[in-house]
Image (cartoon, rainbow, N blue to C red; front, top):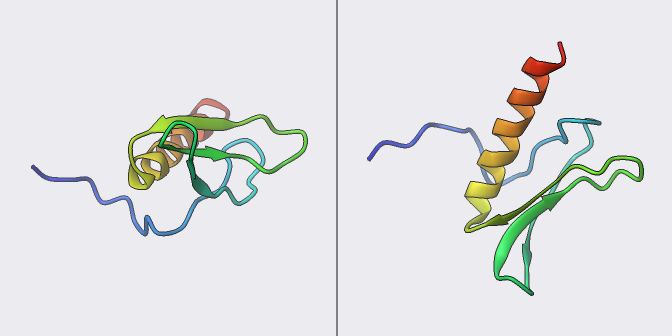
Amino acid sequence: MTRENVGDTRWGWCCPHCNRDVDVVKDPSTDTFRWECPGEACRAVGFGFSSRRQARIALLSYRKRYENTYR
């Protein structure tokens, strides 16, 4: 099984909507990982990921799709 290289997965990336730094955290109530934009006006969120790596890959993928849609 080969994995796509997604860069440095130790750190979060930027929110696709407002470009603020987004952290990936573990949700203790569900034992899954999530990311949520800290911006007051931004409601971007991702949740239910089985690992921190999966959450960051999903955030990166979402950002790429969002940038391609609104060019």
